[in-house]
Image (cartoon, rainbow, N blue to C red; front, side, top):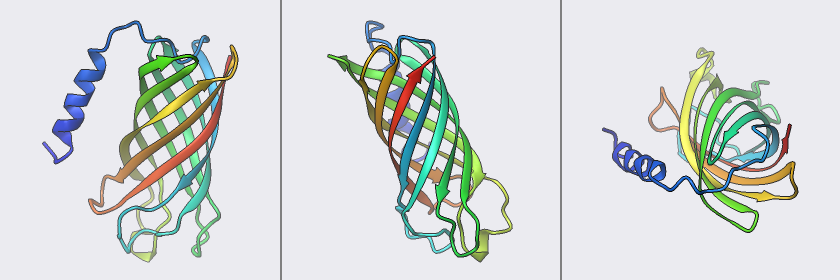
Length: 175
């Protein structure tokens, strides 16, 4: 198991063992979420563009009690000197770990595939697989609207020394 594999597996088992009394993330089973995200590079890998980028993401989420599954797309802008933006399709499962007074704390994972912004060394690679996880806070604004503030750390599967963070602020609308 990797250096982080065992702690992540233990955390997953503990999260699944939480009582089912945790409140739902959304009253509606389906929701759309849009967010503005900041993508700073965190590892000194000269292959990838080290600039902090601003981006957008959109997700369709399906929620059952404290579990939620999102499918979405993300893009980073502005384009780099090579004229290529980063775009990714992803799957993001979440579990609410604590709730109270319209606020919910969640843990999330993410697996995605897409194009990275990189220097000449990795321009031949069309699709890169990314994976990671993080946490966030959901703030219920009313019956249909939820604010989402979250952060994740993501790695690129092919390059072990490449990683980046994602900080997002978004709004979810129950359908």
